[in-house]
Length: 408
Image (cartoon, rainbow, N blue to C red; front, top):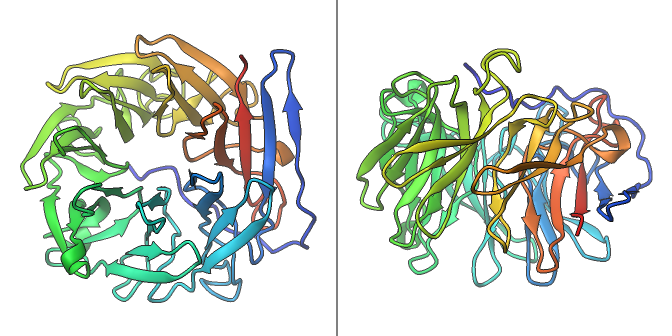
């Protein structure tokens, strides 16, 4: 089954409106603030990939459409942007959809290195048409590091957040397709060496029985082993959780079964003991949502034992995105759907499985349907991206950047 997270068709461009900042405050002292509303013009539209934050509090992200509306079938190819703590917005790069790529189906955020450079992926286009890995300087200098060729040994369709080894600076990632089967391939795990950046090394090519179509970002343990998921394939065609070493030794840790334990697993995070935590976009209680269920939050030990921490049943959220740990060891995340208004939620869950629906998105000019997780500052505030706002892209809007202060 194809991932439901597809880019909506962009409608007729509407007039540019003023940036709106909305704030919702409850009696429990939680605060939700819209920091920026995308206009669907030169600033971009659909900031689905989420955010990264630097030490000065600046936020950076990718939009998947708009920018230069004359490119990419008059939708625009997207932008890389910066938002300062004072609210000043600037575009660092406008994609052309040519050699620099088009992040049309990019779901992963940027990463940064010690020098302040950023790295990201554009899921399609590039020299070979199959996506690129790129580097950006803080001042906006853009360089393609690798263009995927798909066949016979390359992948195609990089979609998720990269991982860079802090010592070797080697970049690791996944592609949604490609490998030895070319355009019919099931995806790859790859490494890009700084010594030979234009050529990638395929650590693993998926063959369906061991997983297919990876749909999440990688995480690394203290020994440098990489962990991730494939959204489909495996023994039940419901996806797998895997480990791969940096020399390419691959192990399936768990085969998902759709119901009751999940389908379409996404990005993972690790705790200090090497346990894997993540969510599945569907699966769980098959009676709660159409198709296979509303998704779950799970824990998998380093030896492959799975525990379901929470099963979504729509009212408190559905289709969870990537997770993050707070300073107290709790997990936080968002769901794209479900909640009081069916516009998604912000939630907290302990590693023991105690779940709290902390905030329900209300839609419209206040935001809805987040497709990315959260990041957090030292003061405990969360930041993320949502759909909604100005209707210059589709009826539901071009998207927004928000700040959320949880109740204390």
